[in-house]
Length: 256
Image (spheres, rainbow, N blue to C red):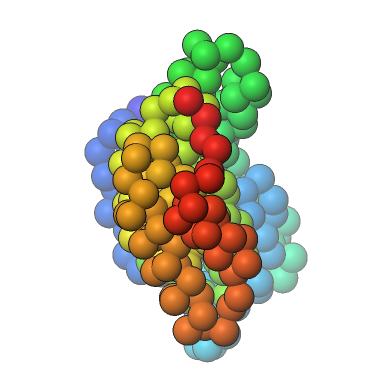
């Protein structure tokens, strides 16, 4: 039975495709171990992160119980679990050892890495890159580490994965545009801009794709909306403003 760990959305464990239910503390514990994948995490540090600094006196003993429960949840067909105890006493620590492809976040990164070299290749290579990039984005079920999104230990990894997700979205739109598939680029980008309206780069790409589809008024409106939203946050966006003017003058060169 194969264990799969999912953190691109609510944190989940799947064993042979079936979801394994975990309580909130086990979810927090697993999240820490996934963030620190392949590295030993001292028990006292785990206590601080799982209990967010408000650990009771019994937390070290409770942690041992949680580790035991998580180990059972992760146990494979041969009775072994990829959760290793290292050291003993006050120096005890725990390490999660799973293959990269068993964690959706790592698969997402690997798939993106596979796609990137194809983007400078033939049209067939770029078509394959489009499929891979879409596969990568489909792994997301919601915000990364959704159950622990407010925990300090998760914030850097959430930010890193979020930035990578935006990069994949931009790369997919660029790949579609170089193939002349501007309508598909619009379809991809419209939803992304609605979800992340302050991402100026995505908004510029959407405006260009709309313009390439001869939807000039919509393209200009996308720019106007972005400028207004960013101005409300005190952010100047000269590139977006310049794009808006170029669109209104119908002077924008786009790939065909």
